[in-house]
Length: 368
Ligand code: SAM
Image (cartoon, rainbow, N blue to C red; front, top):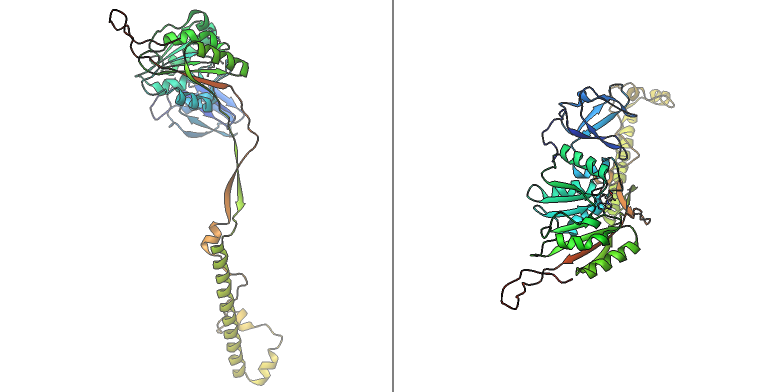
Protein backbone atom coordinates (compact mmCIF):
# COMPACT_ATOMS: atom_id res chain seq x y z
CA UNK A 1 0.00 0.00 0.00
CA UNK A 2 1.47 3.34 -1.10
CA UNK A 3 5.16 3.80 -1.93
CA UNK A 4 7.69 3.14 0.78
CA UNK A 5 10.74 4.79 -0.78
CA UNK A 6 12.29 7.80 0.98
CA UNK A 7 12.00 10.31 -1.85
CA UNK A 8 8.98 11.51 -3.82
CA UNK A 9 8.84 10.04 -7.34
CA UNK A 10 6.80 10.85 -10.45
CA UNK A 11 3.43 9.05 -10.27
CA UNK A 12 3.32 9.05 -6.44
CA UNK A 13 0.24 10.26 -4.63
CA UNK A 14 1.44 12.65 -1.94
CA UNK A 15 -0.42 14.56 0.73
CA UNK A 16 0.00 18.33 0.57
CA UNK A 17 -0.40 19.75 4.07
CA UNK A 18 -1.10 23.49 3.94
CA UNK A 19 -3.01 24.09 7.19
CA UNK A 20 -4.89 21.83 9.61
CA UNK A 21 -8.02 22.58 7.60
CA UNK A 22 -6.42 22.45 4.15
CA UNK A 23 -4.90 19.05 3.39
CA UNK A 24 -5.15 17.60 -0.09
CA UNK A 25 -3.84 14.71 -2.18
CA UNK A 26 -1.69 15.34 -5.25
CA UNK A 27 -0.68 12.94 -8.00
CA UNK A 28 2.87 13.96 -8.95
CA UNK A 29 2.80 14.57 -12.70
CA UNK A 30 5.90 16.17 -14.28
CA UNK A 31 4.90 19.19 -16.36
CA UNK A 32 1.99 20.11 -14.08
CA UNK A 33 1.80 22.93 -11.53
CA UNK A 34 0.23 23.12 -8.10
CA UNK A 35 -1.20 26.51 -7.16
CA UNK A 36 -2.80 27.52 -3.88
CA UNK A 37 -3.01 30.58 -1.69
CA UNK A 38 0.24 29.34 -0.20
CA UNK A 39 2.08 29.83 -3.46
CA UNK A 40 3.04 28.34 -6.76
CA UNK A 41 4.88 24.98 -7.10
CA UNK A 42 5.99 22.80 -10.00
CA UNK A 43 5.36 19.07 -9.57
CA UNK A 44 8.85 18.47 -10.99
CA UNK A 45 10.32 20.53 -8.11
CA UNK A 46 8.89 17.98 -5.68
CA UNK A 47 10.42 14.93 -7.38
CA UNK A 48 13.44 13.64 -5.46
CA UNK A 49 12.78 15.51 -2.20
CA UNK A 50 12.44 13.37 0.94
CA UNK A 51 8.89 12.73 2.17
CA UNK A 52 8.07 15.09 5.04
CA UNK A 53 9.91 18.03 3.44
CA UNK A 54 8.82 21.62 3.87
CA UNK A 55 8.89 23.28 0.45
CA UNK A 56 8.84 27.04 -0.10
CA UNK A 57 6.89 28.38 -3.06
CA UNK A 58 8.47 29.62 -6.29
CA UNK A 59 6.84 33.03 -5.87
CA UNK A 60 7.78 33.34 -2.19
CA UNK A 61 4.18 33.43 -0.98
CA UNK A 62 4.31 30.60 1.49
CA UNK A 63 5.25 26.96 1.99
CA UNK A 64 3.73 23.48 2.04
CA UNK A 65 4.65 20.14 3.61
CA UNK A 66 4.83 17.12 1.31
CA UNK A 67 3.81 13.99 3.24
CA UNK A 68 3.66 10.28 2.54
CA UNK A 69 0.00 9.12 2.58
CA UNK A 70 -1.31 7.01 5.43
CA UNK A 71 -4.94 5.90 5.93
CA UNK A 72 -5.28 8.61 8.59
CA UNK A 73 -4.01 11.36 6.26
CA UNK A 74 -6.07 9.95 3.40
CA UNK A 75 -9.26 10.25 5.50
CA UNK A 76 -8.36 13.90 6.17
CA UNK A 77 -7.53 14.66 2.53
CA UNK A 78 -9.65 12.44 0.27
CA UNK A 79 -12.07 13.77 -2.34
CA UNK A 80 -15.55 13.37 -0.81
CA UNK A 81 -18.04 11.55 -3.02
CA UNK A 82 -20.25 10.62 -0.05
CA UNK A 83 -20.32 11.15 3.68
CA UNK A 84 -17.32 9.35 5.11
CA UNK A 85 -16.18 7.66 8.29
CA UNK A 86 -13.68 9.60 10.40
CA UNK A 87 -10.87 8.26 12.51
CA UNK A 88 -12.60 8.05 15.89
CA UNK A 89 -15.34 5.82 14.45
CA UNK A 90 -12.92 3.84 12.27
CA UNK A 91 -10.68 3.06 15.25
CA UNK A 92 -13.62 2.07 17.45
CA UNK A 93 -15.20 -0.17 14.80
CA UNK A 94 -11.88 -1.85 13.97
CA UNK A 95 -11.35 -2.63 17.61
CA UNK A 96 -14.90 -3.83 18.38
CA UNK A 97 -15.11 -5.96 15.26
CA UNK A 98 -11.78 -7.47 16.34
CA UNK A 99 -10.32 -6.78 12.90
CA UNK A 100 -6.64 -7.62 12.79
CA UNK A 101 -3.84 -8.69 10.50
CA UNK A 102 -5.16 -11.61 8.40
CA UNK A 103 -8.90 -10.90 8.99
CA UNK A 104 -11.40 -11.27 6.16
CA UNK A 105 -13.79 -8.36 6.28
CA UNK A 106 -16.88 -7.30 4.32
CA UNK A 107 -17.94 -3.64 3.98
CA UNK A 108 -20.95 -2.12 2.23
CA UNK A 109 -21.03 0.48 0.77
CA UNK A 110 -17.61 1.56 -0.27
CA UNK A 111 -18.61 5.25 -0.62
CA UNK A 112 -15.47 7.41 -0.72
CA UNK A 113 -13.22 4.60 0.52
CA UNK A 114 -12.26 6.23 3.81
CA UNK A 115 -13.01 3.12 5.91
CA UNK A 116 -11.60 0.83 3.19
CA UNK A 117 -8.10 2.34 3.38
CA UNK A 118 -7.78 1.82 7.13
CA UNK A 119 -9.15 -1.71 6.99
CA UNK A 120 -6.90 -2.66 4.07
CA UNK A 121 -3.86 -1.60 6.09
CA UNK A 122 -5.07 -3.46 9.21
CA UNK A 123 -5.83 -6.80 7.50
CA UNK A 124 -2.70 -6.57 5.31
CA UNK A 125 -1.76 -8.98 2.51
CA UNK A 126 -2.66 -12.03 4.65
CA UNK A 127 -6.27 -10.84 5.02
CA UNK A 128 -8.85 -9.46 2.61
CA UNK A 129 -11.48 -6.74 2.32
CA UNK A 130 -14.59 -7.41 0.23
CA UNK A 131 -16.12 -4.03 -0.53
CA UNK A 132 -19.53 -3.50 -2.19
CA UNK A 133 -20.93 -0.37 -3.82
CA UNK A 134 -24.12 -0.11 -5.89
CA UNK A 135 -23.43 3.36 -7.36
CA UNK A 136 -21.54 2.58 -10.57
CA UNK A 137 -19.52 5.80 -10.92
CA UNK A 138 -18.51 5.69 -7.25
CA UNK A 139 -17.53 2.04 -7.53
CA UNK A 140 -15.36 2.84 -10.57
CA UNK A 141 -13.63 5.79 -8.89
CA UNK A 142 -12.94 3.77 -5.75
CA UNK A 143 -11.54 0.91 -7.84
CA UNK A 144 -9.14 3.29 -9.64
CA UNK A 145 -8.00 4.71 -6.31
CA UNK A 146 -7.41 1.25 -4.82
CA UNK A 147 -5.20 0.36 -7.81
CA UNK A 148 -3.32 3.69 -7.68
CA UNK A 149 -2.68 3.12 -3.95
CA UNK A 150 -1.45 -0.45 -4.47
CA UNK A 151 -4.41 -2.04 -2.64
CA UNK A 152 -5.75 -4.17 -5.50
CA UNK A 153 -4.45 -7.44 -4.00
CA UNK A 154 -6.01 -6.74 -0.61
CA UNK A 155 -9.39 -5.27 -1.67
CA UNK A 156 -11.99 -6.78 -3.99
CA UNK A 157 -14.53 -4.17 -4.99
CA UNK A 158 -17.84 -5.37 -6.41
CA UNK A 159 -20.47 -3.17 -8.03
CA UNK A 160 -23.50 -4.71 -6.40
CA UNK A 161 -26.72 -4.01 -4.50
CA UNK A 162 -26.13 -5.98 -1.31
CA UNK A 163 -29.66 -5.54 0.02
CA UNK A 164 -31.13 -7.13 -3.07
CA UNK A 165 -28.41 -9.49 -4.25
CA UNK A 166 -26.44 -10.26 -1.09
CA UNK A 167 -22.68 -10.77 -0.97
CA UNK A 168 -20.45 -12.69 -3.36
CA UNK A 169 -18.81 -14.75 -0.59
CA UNK A 170 -20.33 -17.26 1.83
CA UNK A 171 -19.32 -18.68 5.16
CA UNK A 172 -15.88 -17.04 5.22
CA UNK A 173 -15.93 -13.47 6.64
CA UNK A 174 -14.68 -12.69 10.17
CA UNK A 175 -16.54 -9.38 10.32
CA UNK A 176 -19.15 -7.38 8.41
CA UNK A 177 -19.53 -3.62 8.45
CA UNK A 178 -22.70 -2.07 7.01
CA UNK A 179 -22.73 1.67 6.23
CA UNK A 180 -25.97 1.70 4.26
CA UNK A 181 -29.26 3.61 4.44
CA UNK A 182 -31.13 0.34 5.21
CA UNK A 183 -28.65 -2.07 6.83
CA UNK A 184 -31.46 -4.28 8.20
CA UNK A 185 -32.14 -5.39 4.62
CA UNK A 186 -28.62 -6.79 4.39
CA UNK A 187 -28.43 -8.50 7.80
CA UNK A 188 -29.68 -11.88 6.52
CA UNK A 189 -27.13 -11.83 3.67
CA UNK A 190 -24.39 -10.82 6.13
CA UNK A 191 -25.20 -13.86 8.24
CA UNK A 192 -24.67 -16.12 5.22
CA UNK A 193 -21.33 -14.48 4.46
CA UNK A 194 -19.97 -14.84 8.02
CA UNK A 195 -17.98 -17.96 8.83
CA UNK A 196 -19.64 -20.45 11.17
CA UNK A 197 -16.61 -22.17 12.68
CA UNK A 198 -15.83 -19.36 15.10
CA UNK A 199 -17.32 -16.30 16.73
CA UNK A 200 -17.87 -13.47 14.24
CA UNK A 201 -19.05 -9.87 14.48
CA UNK A 202 -21.17 -7.32 12.67
CA UNK A 203 -21.57 -3.54 12.95
CA UNK A 204 -24.31 -1.31 11.50
CA UNK A 205 -23.63 2.41 11.20
CA UNK A 206 -26.90 4.37 11.39
CA UNK A 207 -27.41 8.11 11.88
CA UNK A 208 -30.74 8.02 13.77
CA UNK A 209 -32.41 5.99 16.49
CA UNK A 210 -35.27 4.72 14.31
CA UNK A 211 -32.73 3.08 12.01
CA UNK A 212 -30.88 1.66 15.02
CA UNK A 213 -34.11 0.05 16.26
CA UNK A 214 -34.81 -1.52 12.88
CA UNK A 215 -31.25 -2.84 12.70
CA UNK A 216 -31.51 -4.25 16.26
CA UNK A 217 -34.76 -6.06 15.36
CA UNK A 218 -33.23 -7.53 12.23
CA UNK A 219 -30.11 -8.66 14.12
CA UNK A 220 -32.26 -10.25 16.84
CA UNK A 221 -34.39 -12.09 14.34
CA UNK A 222 -31.32 -13.35 12.47
CA UNK A 223 -29.92 -14.88 15.68
CA UNK A 224 -27.16 -12.40 16.46
CA UNK A 225 -26.42 -11.93 20.16
CA UNK A 226 -24.78 -9.41 22.50
CA UNK A 227 -26.34 -6.53 20.62
CA UNK A 228 -25.12 -3.19 21.91
CA UNK A 229 -24.96 0.34 20.64
CA UNK A 230 -22.28 3.03 20.99
CA UNK A 231 -21.75 6.55 19.84
CA UNK A 232 -18.25 7.98 19.53
CA UNK A 233 -18.04 11.64 20.45
CA UNK A 234 -14.94 13.76 20.39
CA UNK A 235 -14.52 15.91 23.47
CA UNK A 236 -12.04 18.69 22.74
CA UNK A 237 -9.55 19.81 25.37
CA UNK A 238 -8.64 23.48 25.62
CA UNK A 239 -4.96 23.91 26.44
CA UNK A 240 -3.75 27.13 28.09
CA UNK A 241 -0.49 28.47 29.53
CA UNK A 242 -1.05 29.79 33.07
CA UNK A 243 1.31 31.08 35.80
CA UNK A 244 2.38 28.35 38.19
CA UNK A 245 0.71 28.37 41.58
CA UNK A 246 3.54 28.31 44.19
CA UNK A 247 3.92 25.22 46.33
CA UNK A 248 4.78 25.49 50.04
CA UNK A 249 8.36 24.39 49.26
CA UNK A 250 8.63 27.16 46.67
CA UNK A 251 7.42 29.76 49.17
CA UNK A 252 9.84 28.58 51.88
CA UNK A 253 12.86 28.60 49.57
CA UNK A 254 11.85 32.00 48.18
CA UNK A 255 11.69 33.45 51.74
CA UNK A 256 15.06 31.91 52.62
CA UNK A 257 16.65 33.46 49.53
CA UNK A 258 15.15 36.83 50.41
CA UNK A 259 16.44 36.63 53.98
CA UNK A 260 19.95 35.70 52.76
CA UNK A 261 19.89 38.51 50.23
CA UNK A 262 18.90 41.09 52.91
CA UNK A 263 21.65 39.93 55.24
CA UNK A 264 24.26 40.16 52.46
CA UNK A 265 23.00 43.66 51.60
CA UNK A 266 23.27 44.77 55.25
CA UNK A 267 26.86 43.46 55.48
CA UNK A 268 27.77 45.19 52.20
CA UNK A 269 26.41 48.49 53.48
CA UNK A 270 28.40 48.18 56.71
CA UNK A 271 31.59 47.35 54.77
CA UNK A 272 31.08 50.28 52.36
CA UNK A 273 30.48 52.89 55.04
CA UNK A 274 33.44 51.60 57.11
CA UNK A 275 35.72 51.91 54.07
CA UNK A 276 34.43 55.43 53.34
CA UNK A 277 35.07 56.48 56.91
CA UNK A 278 38.64 55.15 56.72
CA UNK A 279 39.29 56.95 53.40
CA UNK A 280 37.84 60.22 54.70
CA UNK A 281 40.07 60.16 57.76
CA UNK A 282 43.16 60.03 55.41
CA UNK A 283 42.12 63.14 53.38
CA UNK A 284 43.40 66.63 54.57
CA UNK A 285 40.71 68.96 56.00
CA UNK A 286 40.34 71.44 53.00
CA UNK A 287 40.06 68.59 50.52
CA UNK A 288 37.30 67.06 52.60
CA UNK A 289 35.28 70.30 52.36
CA UNK A 290 35.92 70.60 48.66
CA UNK A 291 34.53 67.13 48.09
CA UNK A 292 31.13 67.96 49.53
CA UNK A 293 28.63 68.02 46.68
CA UNK A 294 31.30 67.01 44.09
CA UNK A 295 31.12 63.92 41.99
CA UNK A 296 33.19 60.98 43.12
CA UNK A 297 35.68 61.38 40.25
CA UNK A 298 37.96 58.56 41.30
CA UNK A 299 35.09 56.11 41.00
CA UNK A 300 33.40 57.72 38.00
CA UNK A 301 36.62 57.89 36.00
CA UNK A 302 37.70 54.40 36.89
CA UNK A 303 40.44 55.71 39.16
CA UNK A 304 42.58 53.75 41.56
CA UNK A 305 39.97 53.63 44.33
CA UNK A 306 38.14 50.26 44.27
CA UNK A 307 34.47 50.52 43.34
CA UNK A 308 31.87 50.10 46.03
CA UNK A 309 30.54 46.61 46.29
CA UNK A 310 27.55 46.37 43.97
CA UNK A 311 24.22 46.81 45.61
CA UNK A 312 21.46 45.34 43.47
CA UNK A 313 17.90 45.95 44.56
CA UNK A 314 16.35 42.77 43.19
CA UNK A 315 17.22 39.38 44.64
CA UNK A 316 18.43 36.95 41.96
CA UNK A 317 15.96 34.33 40.71
CA UNK A 318 16.65 30.67 41.30
CA UNK A 319 16.58 28.30 38.29
CA UNK A 320 13.45 26.49 39.44
CA UNK A 321 11.64 29.83 39.74
CA UNK A 322 12.40 30.61 36.09
CA UNK A 323 11.31 27.16 34.89
CA UNK A 324 8.08 27.18 36.86
CA UNK A 325 6.94 30.56 35.62
CA UNK A 326 4.13 29.04 33.50
CA UNK A 327 2.42 25.71 33.25
CA UNK A 328 0.16 24.16 30.60
CA UNK A 329 -3.38 23.45 31.74
CA UNK A 330 -5.92 21.37 29.85
CA UNK A 331 -9.61 22.07 30.34
CA UNK A 332 -12.32 19.78 28.95
CA UNK A 333 -14.81 21.71 26.83
CA UNK A 334 -18.36 20.99 27.93
CA UNK A 335 -19.84 21.32 24.49
CA UNK A 336 -19.40 18.02 22.65
CA UNK A 337 -19.79 18.28 18.90
CA UNK A 338 -19.54 15.77 16.15
CA UNK A 339 -22.38 13.23 16.18
CA UNK A 340 -21.80 11.09 13.13
CA UNK A 341 -23.81 7.91 13.66
CA UNK A 342 -24.74 5.24 16.16
CA UNK A 343 -22.72 2.06 16.03
CA UNK A 344 -24.75 -1.11 16.61
CA UNK A 345 -22.58 -4.17 17.24
CA UNK A 346 -23.62 -7.81 17.49
CA UNK A 347 -21.96 -11.22 17.56
CA UNK A 348 -22.76 -14.46 15.82
CA UNK A 349 -21.84 -17.35 18.10
CA UNK A 350 -21.17 -20.76 16.51
CA UNK A 351 -23.19 -23.59 17.92
CA UNK A 352 -21.61 -26.98 18.60
CA UNK A 353 -21.74 -29.48 15.71
CA UNK A 354 -25.12 -31.13 15.54
CA UNK A 355 -25.41 -34.83 15.09
CA UNK A 356 -28.19 -36.07 12.79
CA UNK A 357 -30.46 -38.98 13.62
CA UNK A 358 -28.19 -41.32 11.60
CA UNK A 359 -25.19 -40.28 13.74
CA UNK A 360 -23.40 -38.15 11.10
CA UNK A 361 -22.06 -34.72 11.95
CA UNK A 362 -23.89 -32.10 9.93
CA UNK A 363 -21.43 -29.30 10.65
CA UNK A 364 -21.61 -26.10 12.60
CA UNK A 365 -24.91 -24.27 12.51
CA UNK A 366 -26.33 -21.14 14.02
CA UNK A 367 -29.80 -20.51 15.30
CA UNK A 368 -31.96 -17.96 13.60
N1 SAM B 1 -18.06 4.05 4.66
C1 SAM B 1 -17.82 4.88 3.49
C2 SAM B 1 -16.57 5.72 3.70
O1 SAM B 1 -16.02 5.72 4.82
O2 SAM B 1 -16.14 6.39 2.79
C3 SAM B 1 -19.00 5.74 3.18
C4 SAM B 1 -20.22 4.97 2.79
S1 SAM B 1 -21.48 6.00 2.14
C5 SAM B 1 -22.12 6.78 3.50
C6 SAM B 1 -22.74 4.83 1.76
C7 SAM B 1 -22.53 4.17 0.41
O3 SAM B 1 -23.35 3.03 0.34
C8 SAM B 1 -22.92 5.07 -0.76
O4 SAM B 1 -21.82 5.22 -1.61
C9 SAM B 1 -24.05 4.32 -1.43
O5 SAM B 1 -23.99 4.42 -2.84
C10 SAM B 1 -23.79 2.89 -0.98
N2 SAM B 1 -24.99 2.03 -0.94
C11 SAM B 1 -26.23 2.38 -0.49
N3 SAM B 1 -27.05 1.32 -0.58
C12 SAM B 1 -26.33 0.28 -1.08
C13 SAM B 1 -26.63 -1.07 -1.39
N4 SAM B 1 -27.86 -1.56 -1.21
N5 SAM B 1 -25.65 -1.85 -1.87
C14 SAM B 1 -24.40 -1.35 -2.04
N6 SAM B 1 -24.06 -0.08 -1.79
C15 SAM B 1 -25.01 0.73 -1.30
